[in-house]
Length: 159
Image (cartoon, rainbow, N blue to C red; front, side, top):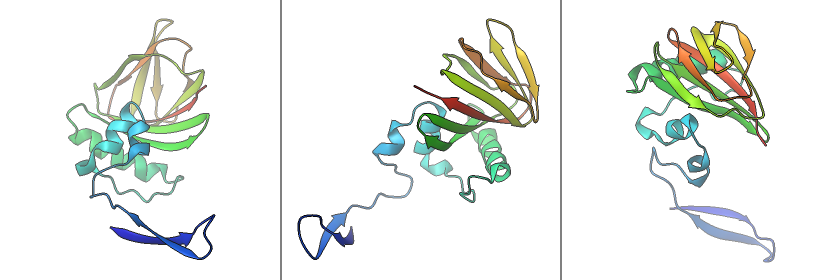
């Protein structure tokens, strides 16, 4: 337990409240609310990554998640980089042959390949993207297949 001292609104002077500390690897309710790959990554305590924490350090983040994906049974790892509603940016690492199964599209989204190459699959046609490629996500059910060990940056706008 830790004491946190702060100014109360209704009571003059300092107040003391007790805050329960979480053991290493445990996450709170906010992390549990994330869905999909980001949630699995947030909850996996023993695979905790140690990137610099700087949002502009995409190279280090990509390297670390690709290394984590290579050790994961499903060959993938993800990190919710930015969440400023309605915008979300997620780094997703996939090993060669790993896939994100078909799923619904958000109202607007794009995919940028940071490492490797991927195939964006959709009913309207598949698109192969190489490192540095940027492509809008089609407004239909779609999936993603890693043609080689890859890292992508998914930018999505949700309702």
